[in-house]
Length: 441
Image 1 (spheres, rainbow, N blue to C red):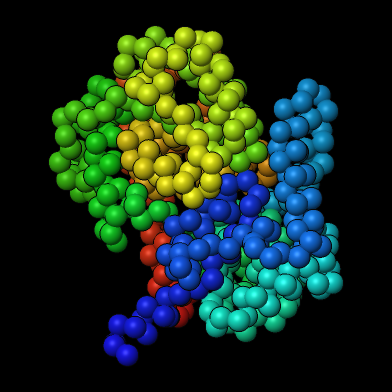
Image 2: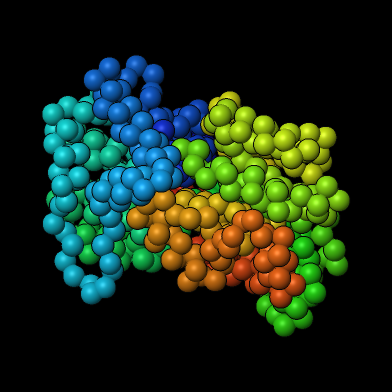
């Protein structure tokens, strides 16, 4: 056995996510190289899942997607969603106080697990002696309750979290958390999680967008992005020393047209916003001054909705050049295509989901209306960073967008995201799993 072999073995781990929206799967995707054969396991749809477990998971997933879409229904939609949201509500951070008392939702989840939910999965994972990394708290609880012998790591994929993320008995739990920011570290402590079980790693971003540990690819992409985001060189003139420190010298012009990506969430909500953006920017799109990327993910209905309305607006001939739709039939292909396309995206427009952390790649963001308590906090975090703004009326995008481009605000937002948002989560998680970092940091 060579000296290199043990190091490789120590970096292996089970990587487990859940198929509920895109958030937990997108978070796991940059960590897939740690898993045996690069395969991420879906806790709710793995091969051989018991029918009893599948029904519990499927009911939860369908209800989540229904509620996310139903929120848009006039009058009653908002009311129904608000009732649902109370079960995942994140309480105000201040005044800081003991929040370790379990909520109703957590008690119900743990009761189901103690009755056998998830035992089949954990017994299968026990057959190989590996640490476990999961991007959702329920598989972590399953592992602990059903006696998983190795390390259990839980990756947090929001800027703040509800009590449901922490174990029933946090002070006795062995679950370790990878926190994306300082707020999550403090929140977990208020929930009673031991400081020794919390690692401030940052969110795991894709290596193909980051580059090596000096974020070389992200720097190069940001440098190409800034000329498009600073139409009158206002930002470049005021902050030339800062730009030189982080990026070196910038190209005089970008190598692509101003590119805006609008991403729809996993439940398919808010797709109408994408078409409103296209309608408002139609003239500039047809003139080749702007490119729009509409992200349908793996939802055929969303893709068909985009195609139907684009055809109605007369964009059939412009689809490949000035308008692109990202759609793939499987989640891996979608994430791969999404990450590739981000490299020549200048502005990311989406609701404040897990994609909020992608501002760390040097992407300024336009925030679509949040869906759920955790997204309210993601929005707040982005605004504090200074890397995002709430969307104004999409109908008038052709007006307010260019006002901001002329002031250089989007260039400033891009730099703020890159500099202020922790973006080395993937590398830090690797180090913890490999045993190179044994104490929280």
